[in-house]
Image (cartoon, rainbow, N blue to C red):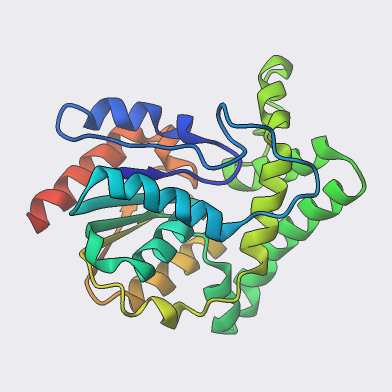
Length: 249
């Protein structure tokens, strides 16, 4: 199984889930560039989505086929792009709260795009004026819930600040995406599209668009969870994944 993490977190977001799944499968959770122990991302350097996909392809080739691919948030977008390029390599695809802003933009639905767009533009504006703390607070409170940033002890914010340059690049990359959801219509492996019960309206709508497009998809909701369900509701998520894999076995 290959796990693709969200923007701003790193592979550590999967730690609890991997512990629950490891007895039954081999779990690979690489850090994308600029996260974990990789070199800090240079300020102002744009993300290279092609390079991120190449990294996933390298790990996937080592893992072998068929591959169970799981992505969360921006990581779900990368997982979709991987699946679009290499559908035959996949045995299954799980997309948790996929952030597919190209699909949302192409849908013409103004309200959800305006909602998430206000957050993104606020984050990027704060970065542009050099206020990294304000950018991180806006981003964190949107995805984790109001007051989440203030609740993080100061000492624990330091590694988050170290990832800020890459997080900025990732946010710019997802905001620049123009891929219509129809581009994923050929992704045929069995898929599970997961929404969190307490997610944002924009995130819920993006999941709906993806589910309606994939030809062999199931949809489910993670009870009681917000967008960061892999961290906050790992046990529930593990159970849902095992149930899905049993259904398609």
